[in-house]
Image (cartoon, rainbow, N blue to C red; front, side, top):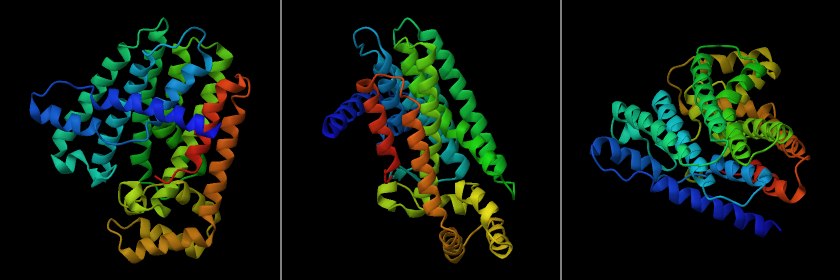
Length: 328
């Protein structure tokens, strides 16, 4: 069964890959379209595209329509826009094992490329000829606005010394979780899901989104850099208020908390600073706590779709389990 599900996900991913990587046909002006194609051809997990297609398949009533791949691709292209602008704001050097666009070209080119991809994403979505397309577009719009709000919270929280875990969850549900949730919802909308099915898949997406971001926070500390495709410890270097920082505020003793805050206040952090922060996280078992929280959220995600036929929800459950153990 697992081999069949693995093959199913691989087949969907490959179809989304081909569409995304070859979507732009134009070449001029070269300073616009060359970096855009560079972004589209980057390797990715295509989680959002997978969720869109699986959400559609979980509820569809009629025959399968390949138009769903235009919707899936639109979500992946929109995701690339968010990555380009996120890299600019974080001044990141690499993404998916390659130079970021603002490093390979320049910041203005990267901003323009990101802006272009928003339009390209809408263009792809509009090719998904389904009866409920207008409702999918509304969800797409909401996701775009919410992601920007999440990015705003992310930058705002960099200026905060204290952040509660509920504030962290607010930020990640907007910055990361909303586009993941909307991906499966858009698929369900285009599959003509009923209200109960949409609510269930929405909850599934919310839990997956939370787990996905906490896993990202974890991988920034423990991952192999070659697999990760970017430098480790970027969150610590940029004083990001991750799951680990938020949890630390509630469990560190006063001395260790003072040390953590002192290091995070530095604009430039030494290797010994980073090593100390990681040691503190390990001292309080925060890596294990994060792994347990990821597993808890994945379990809740799978439980939330129990009202969907078993054979139709199995791919979504399988994908959830894969996300929990991913290494990049």
